[in-house]
Image 1 (cartoon, one colour):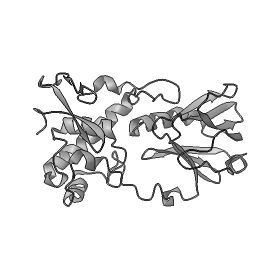
Image 2 (cartoon, rainbow, N blue to C red; image 1 turned 120 degrees about the horizontal axis):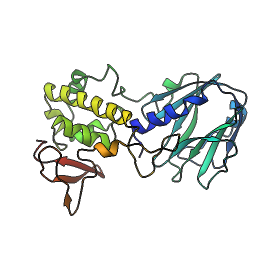
Image 3 (cartoon, helix red, strand yellow; image 1 turned 45 degrees about the vertical axis):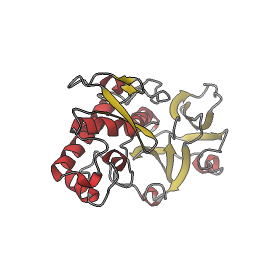
Image 4 (cartoon, helix red, strand yellow; image 1 turned 180 degrees about the horizontal axis):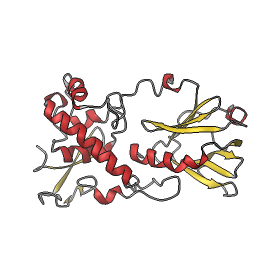
Length: 274
């Protein structure tokens, strides 16, 4: 699933569309996780795209009369294409601009979203319940420690809760915990303030490094320009183990281990993370 760095990389790739005017909207298959509003072609026609921002894993397209929410789901891509690019099997939604460029949602599993949030997107049901952005000043060790005091779940599961902090998905949770030298199964409430400060710092560092690398080259992820990310070349633990054993830790040479947490694979070093 595309995570925060992949979504941000996609947003940046769409920036050339800002200040362009919508010529028409094409809905080929509106049956996504939530149905695409059938009123969008009429609503967006003639509107100018004023800005593109991000909240968690949502891209917010700010038009004259309101905001369109875009989500990549499990395997979706938002592509920036020429208008004469023929649609493929899983190309469900286009915004065609008068410049001849097209914003196209390609989503084989149809878990993505295209939703109208109006003029107050912060009040939308999908956004108003979200925690702070991990790269913001609001996400501090003090905040994390305060939130952890009553949580008995494992720290890996806890930091992936978007009500606590957004955008720390499976890959970057494993990588951040390794960098912070914290075992993924440690109960959240057992973390000290010092550990929380270290963890928040490493979450910020990990996400910043992933953004600089253009995200990870996930099986289904490519940026809006069609190029993959390269952060996977820097993984310390993620995907470096399987049922048959693990690759050596880049720090201590012990084999990387893999366990299942919350139906997701977790990767860690049993020597570096205690």
